[in-house]
Length: 124
Image 1 (tube, rainbow, N blue to C red):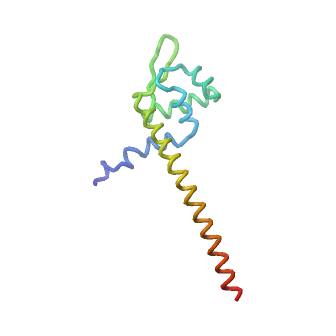
Image 2: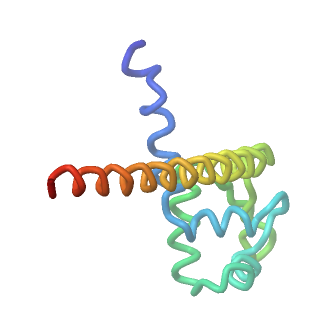
C-alpha cells in the first residue's frame, strides 16, 4: 500500500477533529437537520466563542457545511450517513469496552492469584 492510499493519511485529520469531545457534542446536536449557531449553543451549553471555534475546525475537516440563510448561518452534516457512522462507532466502542473490562477483571484476578502464589513461593 502506498503512502497516499494509507488510511492514516485520509482518516488522521478526521479523527483528530473528532478527538475533541465538544466537537462530537456539536455533531450530535446537529443531528440530521441544519441548525443556526444559537441552536447549537443551547443544545450543547457551550459558549458562543467555543462553538464557533469548534465549528470552524469541523468545517475545515469536512465534517460540517455552512449555509447562509438570510442573516444567519446554518450548519449541517455534509451527509446524514456521518451520524450513522458515529452511532456505529459508539456501539462498537461500547461492545469492546465491556469485553475489555471483562478481560481486565480476569487479568486482575489472575494477577492477584499469581501474586499470592509468588508470595507463597518466595516466603518459603
